[in-house]
Image 1 (cartoon, rainbow, N blue to C red):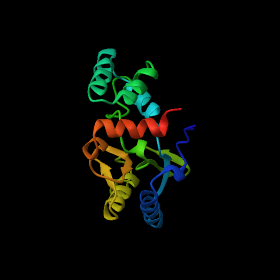
Image 2 (cartoon, rainbow, N blue to C red):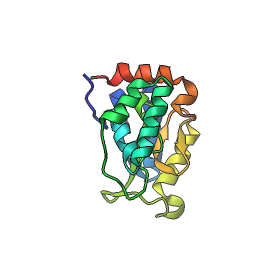
Image 3 (cartoon, rainbow, N blue to C red):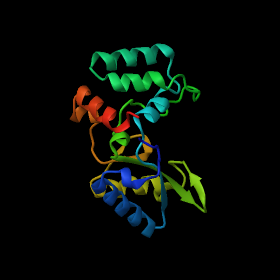
Image 4 (cartoon, one colour):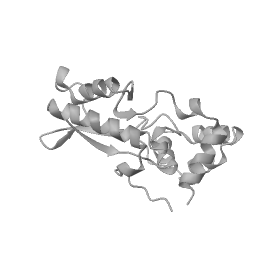
Length: 177
C-alpha cells in the first residue's frame, strides 16, 4: 500500500537524489540553506494540486482527454479526488503528470534565519533560488523556467518520454491502493 510521505528521499531515483544532495551541499558552502520539502508526489496528490483553480469544464475536458489517450487510471485519479479549494486563479501546477510521480523531482525553499523565503528577488545576485538553480544546472539537473522551487532529473515532460498508456500503467502499478 502506498503511503504519501513528501519528504522521503528513499522514494527518489538514487542518481537524481545524489546529484540533488551535491547541489544542496554546494550552495550550503556559499551560505545558502535550501530545504527540500516535496519529493515524490502521488498521482492523487498531483490531481488535487492540478484541480485547484481549474473550472469544472477544464477538469471534465482533461478527464475525457486522458480517457481518450488510454490513461484511464490517471483519469480516475483526477476524478476521484473531487473538487479542490481554489487559489484565486493561481495555478499550483501546470501538469496532471510530472516527474514528482516518478521520483525524479524535488521542490525546495530557501531558508534565512530559520524562516522560509519564497522570494525570487530578495538578495539580488545572492538569491538562494537563483544560486541553487545555477548549481543544479551545472551538475546536470533541470529547473523549469518560472518554477523556482522545482528541480528535476530530465528536461522534457514524462509524456515526451513515454506514451500515455505506458505512463498510466506505471502510475497504476505505483499508486493503486
